[in-house]
Image (tube, rainbow, N blue to C red; front, side, top):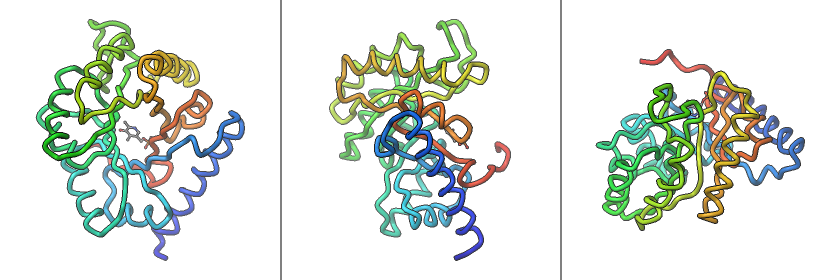
Amino acid sequence: MTTRHTEIASSLRAVRARIERACLDADRSPDEVTLIVVTKYFPVRDVVVLINEGVRDFGENRDQEARSKFQEVRALGHDIRVHFIGQVQTNKAASVTAYADLIHSVDRHRLIPALAKGADRAGRTVDCLIQVDLDRRSVSDDRGRRGGALPGEVLPLADAIAECSPLRVRGVMTVAPLDEDRDSAFGRLADIAGGLRSAYPDATWISAGMSDDLDAAIRQGATHLRVGTAILGSRPPLR
Ligand SMILES: *Cc1c(COP(=O)(O)O)cnc(C)c1O
């Protein structure tokens, strides 16, 4: 094993132990929680190491990088699930639906027909989560630079997704606000998820929790964790 392999395997083991611990404390089964390893900025060889360590779910936030990286990984014959977790530009929607199995960041109406068209053309069904911006309290509030719909927009967006057959509405996603207690923020997301689930019983997924706050996310019912730094180390500064 290379040094890098040893390093990744060891931090992956630590994160898995943290997840198990948090599940135990929250009286939940670890089987309810999917660990998505966020590989943005990291090379295909790291993805292959992770696959050898039993990881199957990968997340990326930029179309170009994701497309070429996972094309290469799949060409090696690996069966993986790709999660698109970044903001989707409308003109990139078709590209993203060609390789992503789950899009975590549906946050506006204009995107939905574009995603549906792309999924149709690719002959695939694409699962969608609605990204919720817990920072912004109203339409005129422009704090939400990370993308995301207002809580009140979640149901109308779900209705629009449900009308497009190649798309499926599966739940919600958020990035926790920096200035709010994590349990409080993820608790609000859980309430929004509950409202969505009463209208769409299949929308059971909650994507929340990153390297720093996955424990709180598990306490508040997260089903999908998006973890980068804690497994792969720090990323180079934003280009
Ligand atoms: C990069 C990223 C993550 C991973 O964050 P870490 O702090 O490195 O675990 C999770 N979610 C989104 C949307 C991201 O862009």
